[in-house]
Image 1: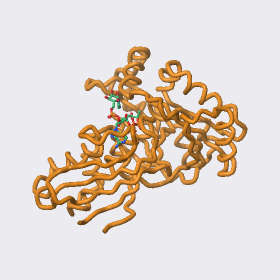
Image 2: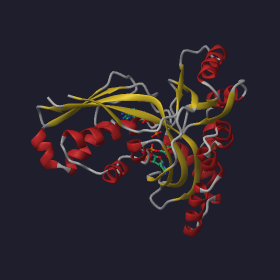
Image 3: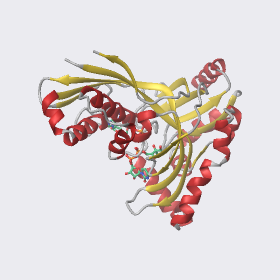
Image 4: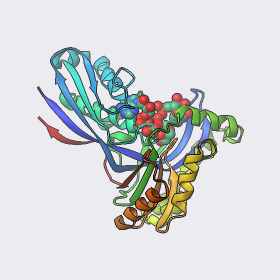
Length: 317
Ligand SMILES: C[C@](O)(CO)[C@H](O)COP(=O)(O)OP(=O)(O)OC[C@H]1O[C@@H](n2ccc(N)nc2=O)[C@H](O)[C@@H]1O
Ligand SMILES: Nc1ncnc2c1ncn2[C@@H]1O[C@H](COP(=O)(O)OP(=O)(O)OP(=O)(O)O)[C@@H](O)[C@H]1O
C-alpha cells in the first residue's frame, strides 16, 4: 500500500502581541512564528478499508476523532469524496517527540503534515495557499506549519508573510510534562483583564499589524542578530499565564539568570519556556544547569534550534 513519511516541526513564538477582539470570539494578533528542529514524524498510509485511523503511543495524545491529525484527514475526505472512495481510507501513525499541550503547535503541525501527505497520496496537486486555506479551518497555527520558517502572522494567526531565513539560532526548551495550559483559557483571561486596552478602530488595527513589519524584531531577524532578537522577544500571554502558573514563572526566571542566556520567553499560550543561547556548547551547559537546579523528572528539557522549513517529506513508498 502507498504511504508517505513526513517530518512535522514545532514552532515557537518570537513575538506575540494581542491587538484586538474579533467578533468571532478570537483575537486579532501580530506575531512572529519560528519553526524549530524539534519534530514529530507522521506516516500517512493508504488503507484498504474506507476508514480513518490514528495510531500514537503517547499517553497524552488522543487517537479518536478529537486528534487534530484525524480531523485533517476527515476534512480531506469531506472536501474530496471521490478521491476518498477511489484511494480508500487513511491510517495515520504519529511518532510524538514534541511535548503535548506546550504552546509549540504540536497538534497543528501534525494536522499540517496530514494535509500535505493526503494531497500527495491522492495526487490532488493542491497549491500551498489551498493547503493553508484548508488548514485555517482546523486551527489558527495550522497554515503556518505547512511551510514554516520565520513568518509574520496576523489576523487570527493565519495571514502569513514570510521573513528572511533564520537558521541555527541555538535554543534550550523546557516544559513540565504534566502541566497543561488551555489556549482558550489564556486568551479569554487576557480579554477579561486587558480587553478594554485594545485598539478598537479597524484602521488602527491594520496600522498596528503593519507596524510589526517595520518593527525592531523584524530588523533584528533581517540582521540575523541573535542577541538583538533575544532583547526584543515579546509575548502578551505571559501576562496571564505567568501569574497563574508559578512553575512557569520560576522556569522563566531560572533561564534568565543563567550565564550564556541571551533572552528567554514563554512560547504561545505556554507552558513551555525557551531560551536563546550563543552556541550549541552553551546550550548543553544551560540545559545541564537547569537540570541541576530542577532535578524533577517531570521537567522535559531539549536542546534545539531554528530551522527554515515546515512539513518535509522524508519517504515515499
Ligand atoms: C497561542 C498560539 O499558539 C500562538 O501561536 C495560537 O494563537 C493558538 O493557535 P491554535 O491553538 O491553533 O488556535 P485555535 O485552535 O485556532 O484556537 C484555540 C483557541 O484559542 C483562542 N484563540 C486562538 C487564536 C486567536 N487568534 N485568538 C484566540 O482567541 C480561542 O479561544 C480558540 O478557541
Ligand atoms: N496530534 C496531536 N498532538 C498533540 N495533541 C493533540 C493532537 N491532537 C489533539 N491533541 C490534543 O490537543 C491538546 C493540545 O495539544 P497541542 O500539543 O496541540 O498543544 P499546543 O502545542 O499548545 O498547540 P498550539 O501551540 O497550537 O496552541 C492536547 O491536550 C491533546 O489532547
